[in-house]
Image (cartoon, rainbow, N blue to C red; front, side, top):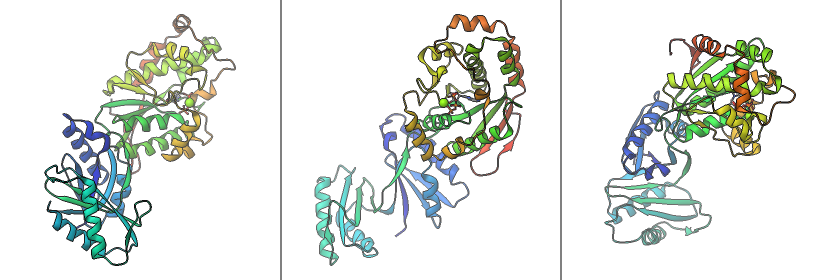
Length: 396
Ligand code: ATP
Ligand code: MG
């Protein structure tokens, strides 16, 4: 019987009226990551099915990075809902396997079946014991679990349950612009936003010659790691040197970071609107540094009207590091290249900046012109998860 990959949706199945929209997007995203393989994808409200002749391992490996997938199974579809027929098929499948202990897990979405899941499991378990010699039931640590799903028009049988990464399919919640530095936090913040279905573009502020080409390449490598969940990723690179030098020269040093971040926010919000992104996303975490106190967040946040989502706001640094390791961005993030903030960090940054002072200081510098200039000349890189990145500048 033909082996098929089944996908379980998890949280998606709670989307009653919109479920078709979510599933269509999930299929699209799956086809995108499998585009060079010979596969067919079909779906109904309960499951997505992936058929492939000889690419099972590769398909499974790639599906592990697709948001919206709760669980992945490999099994067979029996085109019957007749319990006796299912029993015979299960025996045929089990005869190909080596095991001493087993248990049956049943699920019944076909409510026409006049029995419970527990009864179905018991009934099939007894039949297996009768038809295969030298095996016994072990509900705690079986060698094999026989999963059977009794559906309206067919029955699924499988033996493995691989955990998917969950969340919503990327793109179902629209677009966000991620402020991506070379640090540990922002790639993780981007990952979490994508997990909620937000397709991201990223923006990076560089200050050559104060920041190096290695620092930029590090951000590009991080963007590439994120692109694997996002199908591809557009990275906006802003030359921040002029603005940063002007701030450094003219503004009291305790307010350097506050004003610099207000400029970053302003530029990010303009790029976001141009690219139809509805939110900014960043790696700020309450209390982590002076610019991330609640008063700082207020003083910095007042310059933009779009929501700023901070997925890590309430995370401990150690938990962030764990996640960074899990998504494989940590080793890149800790490479020792300075980004623009670290170079211009004052000795005593203000912890409770006043909005009035920010506004007053900003009058000293012609920031609107500089912002216009920085945006006009910004570089855009489209990063594909699979191939080498290719640069182009005509996106805006
Ligand atoms: P990370 O927070 O990513 O570890 P970091 O600690 O160097 O990097 P912070 O100074 O904590 O950065 O800045 C907080 C957030 O502001 C970052 O998580 C990131 O979202 C954004 N940010 C900081 N520097 C830059 C930059 N050069 N380009 C784009 N975004 C930046
Ligand atoms: Mg940080």
